[in-house]
Amino acid sequence: MICVYLCLSALNLRFLYQSKIYARVRMSILLSSISDKSAFLEALEYGRAFRQADKPNDEDCEPA
Image 1 (tube, rainbow, N blue to C red):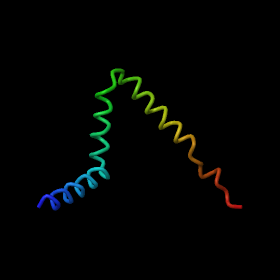
Image 2: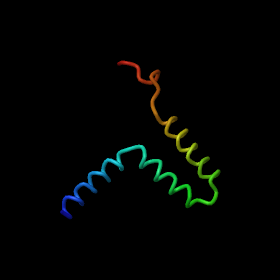
Image 3: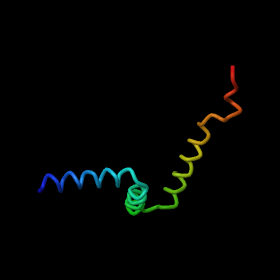
Image 4: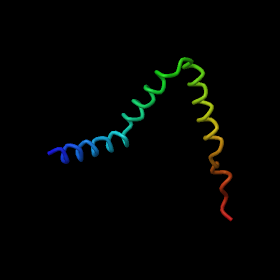
């Protein structure tokens, strides 16, 4: 019975891990541990902008 419970718990955790809910929970836990939220959110936005700038544009990918 314990094995079944652990297996189901593992499946639930796997589903939760892959879901957006886990991302929101993880973000809220992370934000609650940071005292300067505005600086953290600014750093997140900077990271997003950096990743977007690193992506190739359609114009850059011309066929040979």
